[in-house]
Length: 225
Image 1: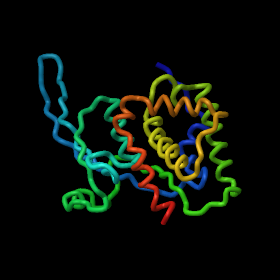
Image 2 (image 1 turned 60 degrees about the horizontal axis):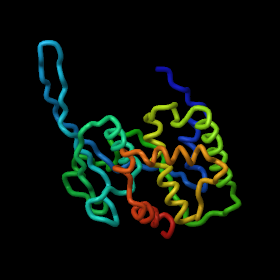
Image 3 (image 1 turned 30 degrees about the vertical axis):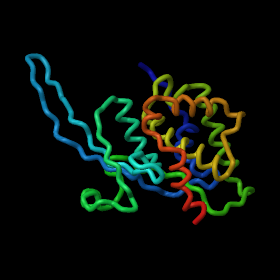
Image 4 (image 1 turned 90 degrees about the vertical axis):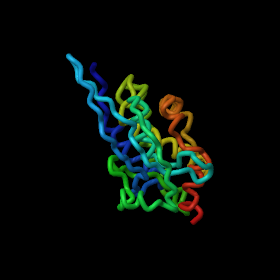
Protein backbone atom coordinates (compact mmCIF):
# COMPACT_ATOMS: atom_id res chain seq x y z
CA UNK A 1 0.00 0.00 0.00
CA UNK A 2 1.49 3.39 -0.95
CA UNK A 3 2.15 5.82 1.85
CA UNK A 4 2.48 9.58 1.87
CA UNK A 5 5.98 10.96 1.67
CA UNK A 6 7.14 12.99 4.63
CA UNK A 7 7.70 16.54 3.51
CA UNK A 8 10.99 18.23 4.45
CA UNK A 9 9.12 20.52 6.83
CA UNK A 10 7.74 17.53 8.72
CA UNK A 11 11.17 15.92 8.92
CA UNK A 12 12.58 19.21 10.15
CA UNK A 13 9.94 19.34 12.86
CA UNK A 14 11.18 16.06 14.30
CA UNK A 15 14.68 17.53 14.61
CA UNK A 16 14.00 21.18 15.26
CA UNK A 17 11.06 21.34 17.68
CA UNK A 18 13.73 21.28 20.37
CA UNK A 19 14.81 24.79 19.37
CA UNK A 20 11.46 26.28 20.28
CA UNK A 21 11.32 28.07 23.62
CA UNK A 22 14.91 27.03 24.30
CA UNK A 23 14.08 23.34 24.41
CA UNK A 24 17.14 21.65 23.04
CA UNK A 25 20.31 20.00 24.30
CA UNK A 26 21.72 16.58 23.45
CA UNK A 27 20.18 13.93 25.64
CA UNK A 28 20.41 10.20 26.26
CA UNK A 29 17.76 7.57 26.75
CA UNK A 30 17.40 5.73 30.03
CA UNK A 31 16.74 2.21 28.84
CA UNK A 32 18.39 -1.09 28.16
CA UNK A 33 16.96 -4.12 26.42
CA UNK A 34 18.00 -7.62 27.42
CA UNK A 35 17.11 -10.04 24.62
CA UNK A 36 16.24 -13.63 25.45
CA UNK A 37 16.77 -16.75 23.38
CA UNK A 38 14.08 -17.75 20.94
CA UNK A 39 12.60 -21.20 20.72
CA UNK A 40 12.02 -22.58 17.22
CA UNK A 41 9.04 -24.84 16.74
CA UNK A 42 9.03 -26.90 13.54
CA UNK A 43 6.05 -28.25 11.63
CA UNK A 44 5.77 -30.02 8.30
CA UNK A 45 5.13 -26.78 6.40
CA UNK A 46 6.25 -23.83 8.55
CA UNK A 47 8.79 -22.77 11.13
CA UNK A 48 7.21 -20.69 13.89
CA UNK A 49 9.40 -18.36 15.99
CA UNK A 50 8.03 -18.11 19.52
CA UNK A 51 9.86 -15.31 21.36
CA UNK A 52 10.10 -15.14 25.12
CA UNK A 53 9.25 -11.75 26.66
CA UNK A 54 11.89 -9.06 26.19
CA UNK A 55 13.32 -7.61 29.40
CA UNK A 56 13.22 -3.82 29.23
CA UNK A 57 15.08 -1.83 31.89
CA UNK A 58 13.39 1.56 32.13
CA UNK A 59 13.58 4.67 34.29
CA UNK A 60 11.41 4.45 37.40
CA UNK A 61 8.97 7.12 38.53
CA UNK A 62 10.25 9.82 40.88
CA UNK A 63 6.85 10.31 42.49
CA UNK A 64 5.00 6.98 42.64
CA UNK A 65 6.50 3.55 43.40
CA UNK A 66 6.40 0.91 40.66
CA UNK A 67 5.50 3.31 37.87
CA UNK A 68 7.34 4.33 34.70
CA UNK A 69 9.40 7.50 34.80
CA UNK A 70 9.52 10.43 32.40
CA UNK A 71 11.80 9.10 29.67
CA UNK A 72 10.61 9.60 26.07
CA UNK A 73 13.19 7.08 24.81
CA UNK A 74 11.81 4.39 27.10
CA UNK A 75 8.30 5.21 25.96
CA UNK A 76 9.31 5.11 22.31
CA UNK A 77 10.57 1.56 22.69
CA UNK A 78 7.58 0.46 24.75
CA UNK A 79 5.22 2.02 22.23
CA UNK A 80 6.88 0.01 19.48
CA UNK A 81 6.53 -3.22 21.44
CA UNK A 82 2.89 -2.44 22.25
CA UNK A 83 1.99 -1.53 18.68
CA UNK A 84 3.64 -4.70 17.37
CA UNK A 85 2.09 -6.72 20.19
CA UNK A 86 5.43 -8.16 21.26
CA UNK A 87 5.72 -9.54 24.81
CA UNK A 88 7.98 -7.74 27.28
CA UNK A 89 8.74 -7.44 30.98
CA UNK A 90 9.68 -4.08 32.51
CA UNK A 91 12.42 -3.80 35.11
CA UNK A 92 12.17 -0.35 36.68
CA UNK A 93 15.49 1.25 37.58
CA UNK A 94 16.01 4.12 40.03
CA UNK A 95 18.69 6.10 38.23
CA UNK A 96 19.74 7.87 41.43
CA UNK A 97 20.57 4.44 42.85
CA UNK A 98 21.39 2.09 39.99
CA UNK A 99 21.85 -1.56 40.96
CA UNK A 100 25.31 -2.98 40.36
CA UNK A 101 24.07 -5.56 37.85
CA UNK A 102 22.57 -2.79 35.72
CA UNK A 103 25.77 -0.76 35.71
CA UNK A 104 27.73 -3.85 34.68
CA UNK A 105 25.23 -4.65 31.95
CA UNK A 106 25.13 -1.10 30.65
CA UNK A 107 28.29 0.72 31.85
CA UNK A 108 27.82 3.80 29.67
CA UNK A 109 24.31 4.29 31.07
CA UNK A 110 22.81 4.92 27.64
CA UNK A 111 20.45 3.13 25.34
CA UNK A 112 21.90 0.21 23.39
CA UNK A 113 19.04 -0.20 20.95
CA UNK A 114 17.58 3.26 20.44
CA UNK A 115 18.77 5.97 18.12
CA UNK A 116 19.63 8.93 20.31
CA UNK A 117 17.51 11.99 19.70
CA UNK A 118 17.76 15.40 21.28
CA UNK A 119 15.58 15.76 24.34
CA UNK A 120 13.59 18.79 25.39
CA UNK A 121 14.71 20.86 28.33
CA UNK A 122 13.77 24.12 30.00
CA UNK A 123 16.49 26.69 30.77
CA UNK A 124 16.50 28.50 34.10
CA UNK A 125 16.30 31.88 32.44
CA UNK A 126 15.14 32.93 29.02
CA UNK A 127 14.45 36.20 27.31
CA UNK A 128 10.85 35.99 26.05
CA UNK A 129 11.81 38.17 23.09
CA UNK A 130 14.74 36.04 21.91
CA UNK A 131 12.75 34.50 19.06
CA UNK A 132 12.66 30.88 20.26
CA UNK A 133 8.89 30.84 20.71
CA UNK A 134 8.48 32.15 17.18
CA UNK A 135 10.85 29.45 15.91
CA UNK A 136 8.79 26.77 17.66
CA UNK A 137 5.56 28.16 16.26
CA UNK A 138 7.06 28.23 12.76
CA UNK A 139 8.00 24.54 13.02
CA UNK A 140 4.61 23.61 14.44
CA UNK A 141 2.92 25.57 11.68
CA UNK A 142 4.81 23.58 9.04
CA UNK A 143 3.90 20.37 10.82
CA UNK A 144 0.27 21.50 10.99
CA UNK A 145 0.24 21.95 7.19
CA UNK A 146 1.78 18.52 6.67
CA UNK A 147 -0.76 16.75 8.88
CA UNK A 148 -3.60 18.67 7.23
CA UNK A 149 -2.55 17.36 3.80
CA UNK A 150 -1.24 13.91 4.73
CA UNK A 151 -2.61 12.97 8.16
CA UNK A 152 -3.88 11.92 10.49
CA UNK A 153 -0.34 10.63 11.14
CA UNK A 154 3.03 11.68 9.76
CA UNK A 155 3.11 8.99 7.10
CA UNK A 156 -0.57 8.91 6.31
CA UNK A 157 -3.45 6.85 7.71
CA UNK A 158 -1.32 4.40 9.68
CA UNK A 159 0.87 5.19 12.66
CA UNK A 160 4.60 4.78 12.02
CA UNK A 161 7.96 4.83 13.80
CA UNK A 162 8.14 8.60 13.27
CA UNK A 163 4.97 9.07 15.32
CA UNK A 164 6.22 6.76 18.06
CA UNK A 165 9.35 8.91 18.31
CA UNK A 166 7.70 12.33 18.12
CA UNK A 167 4.67 11.56 20.30
CA UNK A 168 6.51 11.15 23.63
CA UNK A 169 8.46 14.37 23.03
CA UNK A 170 5.28 16.32 22.27
CA UNK A 171 3.79 14.86 25.45
CA UNK A 172 6.69 16.22 27.50
CA UNK A 173 6.47 19.54 25.67
CA UNK A 174 2.77 19.87 26.45
CA UNK A 175 3.18 19.14 30.16
CA UNK A 176 6.48 20.91 30.85
CA UNK A 177 5.67 24.08 28.93
CA UNK A 178 2.17 24.15 30.35
CA UNK A 179 3.48 23.92 33.91
CA UNK A 180 6.60 26.07 33.76
CA UNK A 181 5.76 28.53 30.97
CA UNK A 182 1.94 28.54 30.96
CA UNK A 183 2.23 27.79 27.23
CA UNK A 184 0.23 25.46 25.01
CA UNK A 185 -0.19 24.74 21.32
CA UNK A 186 -2.40 27.57 20.01
CA UNK A 187 -5.86 26.98 18.57
CA UNK A 188 -4.58 28.33 15.25
CA UNK A 189 -2.84 24.96 14.77
CA UNK A 190 -5.82 22.59 14.92
CA UNK A 191 -4.14 19.73 13.06
CA UNK A 192 -1.22 19.67 15.48
CA UNK A 193 -3.70 19.54 18.36
CA UNK A 194 -5.72 16.75 16.72
CA UNK A 195 -2.50 14.86 15.94
CA UNK A 196 -1.45 15.02 19.57
CA UNK A 197 -4.89 13.85 20.67
CA UNK A 198 -4.85 10.96 18.19
CA UNK A 199 -1.43 9.78 19.40
CA UNK A 200 -1.97 10.43 23.11
CA UNK A 201 -5.33 8.61 23.18
CA UNK A 202 -4.03 5.34 21.72
CA UNK A 203 -4.12 2.45 24.16
CA UNK A 204 -0.40 1.88 23.65
CA UNK A 205 0.36 5.49 24.60
CA UNK A 206 -1.91 5.55 27.63
CA UNK A 207 -0.31 2.34 28.87
CA UNK A 208 3.28 3.58 28.49
CA UNK A 209 3.11 7.31 29.28
CA UNK A 210 4.71 8.93 32.30
CA UNK A 211 2.64 10.52 35.03
CA UNK A 212 2.28 14.29 34.65
CA UNK A 213 3.78 14.68 38.12
CA UNK A 214 6.87 12.84 36.94
CA UNK A 215 7.32 15.09 33.93
CA UNK A 216 7.10 18.15 36.18
CA UNK A 217 9.52 16.72 38.75
CA UNK A 218 11.84 15.36 36.08
CA UNK A 219 12.39 18.81 34.59
CA UNK A 220 12.35 20.76 37.87
CA UNK A 221 16.15 20.63 38.37
CA UNK A 222 16.64 22.07 34.88
CA UNK A 223 14.33 24.93 35.72
CA UNK A 224 14.98 25.55 39.41
CA UNK A 225 18.63 24.48 39.54
